Length: 136
Image (cartoon, rainbow, N blue to C red; front, side):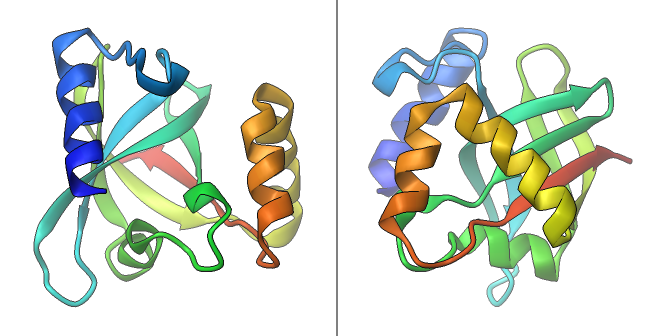
């Protein structure tokens, strides 16, 4: 998985955020986060939906796996992080795990924008979290 993520990161940076691998297109940001236990900086490509000039939503889908992705736990432990966007470079943001009512509305937008998210939901028993990233 680390090799795959690095391939996506490299393609994102080389092509101004346009990632043709698996049809991601321009819907990704690179999440720079800090390991909850290790304290090490990590980078994860994640699908993002821009909600305005200062807000992005990301879904902790992990392809419908039974557990949340590591980056989700890292954001809960260290919410002040950065995202990398093709338009703005590094953007300092604060992560907020959306409460259920806000999450449900945000999740609906994810499933409407891509059938893959609905498939992820069918594969798992967990409620897939949605995280708000708000510019600091």
